[in-house]
Length: 365
Image 1: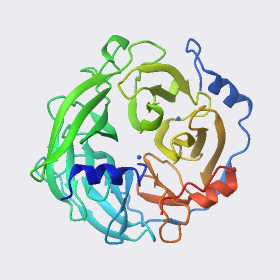
Image 2: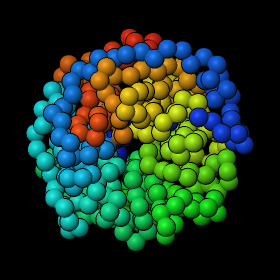
Image 3: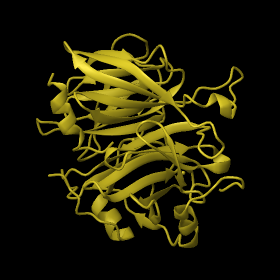
Image 4: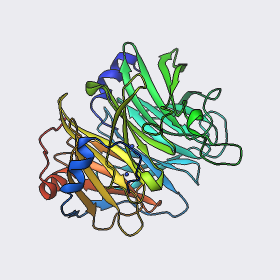
């Protein structure tokens, strides 16, 4: 197992997985977005992996190994396994795990993230933990969060000195499975400081946060994505009557900004970041639907809506992953999206860029 510094360097190579109600303040980006929505481009999938309706696929992550391997690692919630695909072709390679709560076992895996070229973190909703695996052999390295997580879903990772700063969304509910009142939403995200020690993962819960005002509270939470260069966390509010994206700082403060209202009439789901250096690029966020499944593009800095696209076949997308790495047929990287809960659809970023007019030149070789 390589040390944490190598992991932190590798993390930057792979960026890894939404109607408007009155009474909510809206920033300029929202107002601008609704006035120039425009057409939705259609992008043909490069491939769709073999489909298995027993999987209930949720979140993909992308692994680029030192040995030349290029994998998609997807969580299969109903099967309690990880499904590994060849990212170049979509071929299914293997399944990892089985139902249980022991080392290497899984219970409704959901969010997943690859850190560098040697570490995988998997959120398990029903075990209320995050489990770590070594790549490429998937050796279990321990777990964390069991004492503080209640119903975890999404995950994002930020380098923090000699450790990793791991953010996990927690969609806890009242005893009768309802959304808690505003005053009880102050722990919607848990922060852990994570490092490797003696070939095992060691973690400390350092903070919990969540705004408790009507403007900034996250009532239904899953997807989260960090942008360290801009000191931002983007969190999807999945409440269907007011689905949008909220912006927090890395230390858990609501910035007063939200965006995307009016673009997610169904439900905000997978979020990804296409980064061009520290100050340009795009947020990609999914409006999940059975018949209409749209990926929206927003300017990374201004948060203004800049385009939208859909796959020819891709539907019911939950999690997404984006790689800016050149590999296989993907000269400008690829967007990998969960498809009908049964597999993964791959969309070539070069074709997305051609269809929507966004940049495609921010490639990691």
